[in-house]
Amino acid sequence: MTLFPGVAHDRIERTSTSLPVPKLNSPDLLKAAEAVLRLQSTVYCDDFTDVRSGRFLLLNQKYDFGDVDGIRWREEFKEERNNPLRRMTLAYMGYVVPLLAEGRQSDLKLVSQILAELEKQNHWSIPGVFRDVWNAYTVSHRVINLLAGLALFLRSGGTLEIRSHDVIMTHIRFCVAFVLENLERDLQYNHLLKNYVSLAVYASAVGHLPKSLSDLPSAIDRSIEQNVLPDGGHSERCPMYHVLCMNDLDVLSSSGVLGDEFVAKLTSTKSLMKDALAVVTHPDGDIALFNDSWIGEAPRAAGFLQNVDMTEFARSPSTGYVRMGRESDVVIFDCGPCGPDDNPGHAHADFLSIELSINGHRFFVDPGVPTYSEGKLRNLSRSASCHNGPSIKGEEPIEFWKSFRVGRRGKAVELDSSCFADLAPLCSAGSHDGYAHLRSEVRRFLFLWPEESLLVIDVVVCEEPKDCFSRFLIPTSWRKTGTGMQFCQEDTQVDVKALIGQMSPAVESSHWPRFGLEMAAHSFSINPVRQNDRHVSAMWVGWSDSAVMPDDSQLSRFIKVVS
Image 1 (tube, helix red, strand yellow):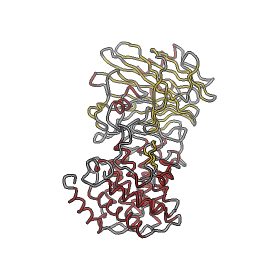
Image 2 (cartoon, rainbow, N blue to C red):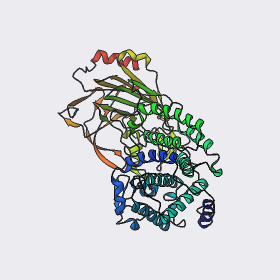
Image 3 (tube, one colour):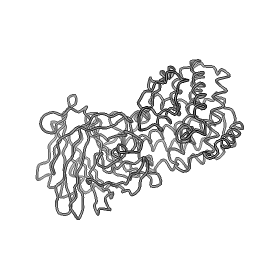
Image 4 (cartoon, rainbow, N blue to C red):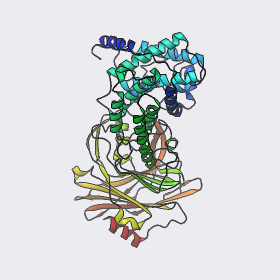
């Protein structure tokens, strides 16, 4: 396509004119639009109204173009990182969903103006347009958002003025033809599923499944099987993409073009996904941030978890996550692979990492995602040394390159913890082989006394001495007090002590719970003690007056069992 953009454009334009014109009065489309609105209301909150003045919120940063005619679609956005992703986000046009949902006639004209500028400034002969504005993933988002926005516009009393209607409909049909021509069968996974969701939303707007989309149900079925693991977890092991996938399944279920039998299967899949989502959900109602996940890009997890029983111990064995705790005190443990071997692009080296909530507040936190752009910051945020897990200095259990490429990689697995189940009310364990090239194996053992304390024991088995450490990250919403390692928030005080190994002082660090937004954090590490062919460290975290730190004899028993 990029070699002969004019020829390709003409071919897709011819295809688009043969596609049925969406009617927009389908009750099923409106149901699907509600799920789309739920997503975009999360992303844009109240900032969508600024679009009327040419101001756009793009990945947590605001950009003022003066008015919609001044939008610079090829903008460099005054920074070196994430320009392609911000251009994609601008071209997703997710902001039009809550905007049109208000039913204001002037907003319909505004959307047609935005589309006219998009087409004018992104001619296919311009380098880079197929990486952002005319990327098939971007175009799929645009189809979904425009159709959902129009359905909500009509529900709110808006009327489709002919000129604006024709501009928008022509663009939508062209985009549908573009997606059909450029299905992302190379990347597959969440990208290909999004392509199919856009086609299903289009069919819902038409009111039936056009002949050109007759194989869509079987294609969607295969894509869901690829994206959703047998335990209901997301195959890319990103809690954020897990929620986004659940939202897509809601859209598909509502589309009305997939048949009752298929919808029943989707309902069963969504039930499994709810159970798996509960495993990676904190007491605050939102997701753990393992791999490429951040807050605010997907609806809150709690919105999908009605009537789901949050048990003391839950696991997703295929996905590789474990959740232990009661109500406001929860530890979430990553003991699975980095992602699917044929597409691990969203992987971080967070093997055996944990996130911990105490009294409903996040205590140990994942670094999050500062950027999707290639470079030192992307590499650092994906590294083992940046996560709450054990690692070997200067070495990585995953070989990262560029932004989404992975070479050599290890794999974590959950270990049988039944042999030490009598040591604590709740326990779990895992190991990973990411340092097998160094003839080393890493193991982590977790012992939780709900509402009281957590014991973390790390063991690195290796023939030769290594420079090992276990690093932990605490947000500065927890204020450090005293001369030791005590942290306070509201009425809760947490004590952190190294029982085996040497604990470093807490130093200033950063985390990015929302994409690109840096927040301050405390960081510290524990260096283990060499014992024969292994390095061993033990850390105790207590937050209750009734919590009792293990004495030497008790600790010896723990070490004996885990060894």
